[in-house]
Image 1 (spheres, one colour):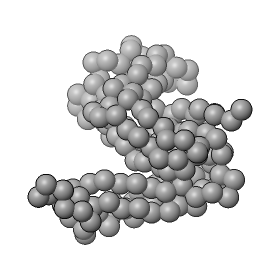
Image 2 (cartoon, one colour):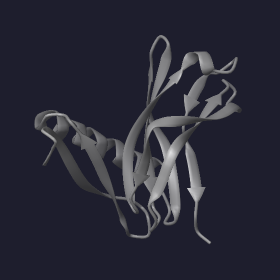
Image 3 (cartoon, helix red, strand yellow):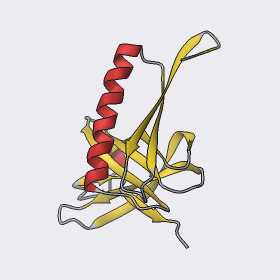
Length: 155
């Protein structure tokens, strides 16, 4: 726990086993929640990441963005996702690719949504994130919205 300019920030580091050339991805969470709330959140995120790693294993040299939950509100959709970095490099992101999917499963459109602040995902780390997608930006016939992407960096 660090005291930064009078407010408390909890920095929580957790190690999760991942199928990635016997390497482990670390989960980094920065928050202003109280400790009891933070412990609940960390347990939830650990379970979410564990489930994701079982369903969609990541390979060494890949960066993966995977939707973990979708919360539909009246005017917008909140997309929760993990960015998993299984490379030896720091990954910097300013935008997230959002896919608009038709009921039949094909992609109607894909747009880059700017994050509130740029992210730096350390090597061999996984970071939980979320964005709000305004429903007015949906193309016609949108059935669901996801952020799933996989990028390979192996040579």
